[in-house]
Structure formats: C-alpha cells, structure tokens
Length: 211
Image (cartoon, rainbow, N blue to C red):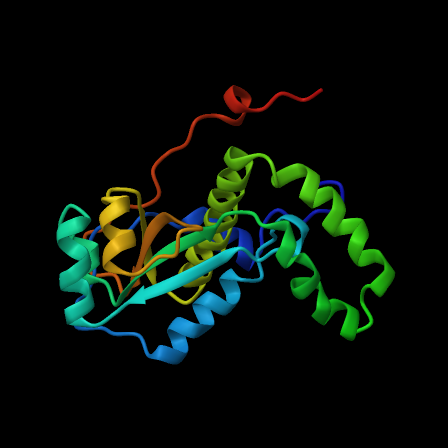
C-alpha cells in the first residue's frame, strides 16, 4: 500500500504480465459475441468531448484474412490469430457532439443546456485544424485498442498491435470512409507455447520528471 493505493491487484497484474504475442494457435476461434464484447470494452475508453470517433472491422474469416494479409506484410498473426481488428479513428468532427451527448441528457447525467458548452469549444479546437482532427482520430483509436489489449489479456488471450500495413490499400479493400484513419491492426487469439514474457522496460527514473 502506497498513499492509499494498492499497488498489486488483478488489473495491475494483468497489465504487468502482458506481452506482445507472436505465436497463436490457429485452431482456436472466437465467437462473434466474444468479438463484440472486446469492442464493447474498447469503446468505454475516453474520447475528446465524448465524440466516440472510432470504428472497428473484425477480420475473422479465412476469406477476409486472405484479403488483409498481403497488404499487411503477410504478418503471421493475421492468419493465425482468431481475429484481427482494423482499428479506425474518425477525424474529429464537432458536429456529432449533440448526437453523442444525447444519451447522457436522456439519462439525466448532463443537463441539455450544457451541450453547447461542449460543442462550441470543440468547434474552435478542431474545425479549422485538419492536423488536430487527424491527431484526435489516432488518439481515440489507440486508446480504445489499448483497452482491448488488456481486456484480452484478462481473458487469457494474446494480442499483437501492428502498424505494418499499406494504409491506402487497407482503406480501399475494406471500404473505409474518407474521414477514417486506419490507426493500427490488432490481432487477438489464443497463444501457443514459445511466446516471450514481457520485455524489460526503461527505468522509471529515465522517463519521469517530478515537478
């Protein structure tokens, strides 16, 4: 216990024991309900102004894997893992905020009068700034993928985040919209023996400044 924070629990152990999976058992599949649950967990991740600017394409059939593999450097996880998600971030668009906040208003979490207090500053932050729109797409997709990575680990599944792919080809082959950025590929499935444990990290003293 440090300052009231328990430094060892199931969540922390899950994070500390995770490693990138290189070897999957291709005989083990995930059901569509299991895939949906991983995405549901991923979509609890935070997004700017609650825009929820993401979409996930679950590449799980042999036919779809055969379409993805050659435009993703033929990386083995795409073929061997149960599913590879194409994690898409959507360019930050302030106009969607009223719609995305409507469930909060209906549930009594947010007063309706507060919605413009979110939409107006978001408009100023993103509308005239394409790079910020894209940066937010990448941030949102990456945070959601991280949640899915640790959820998979908690379910005794391996995962492999990958940026080795032809983004334009993936967008064409899988019908991404003009406002969608393929942030990463994320393979998930059952591990087989021979994977490395988590690799040592740089010391905290090298990466942290206390000010």
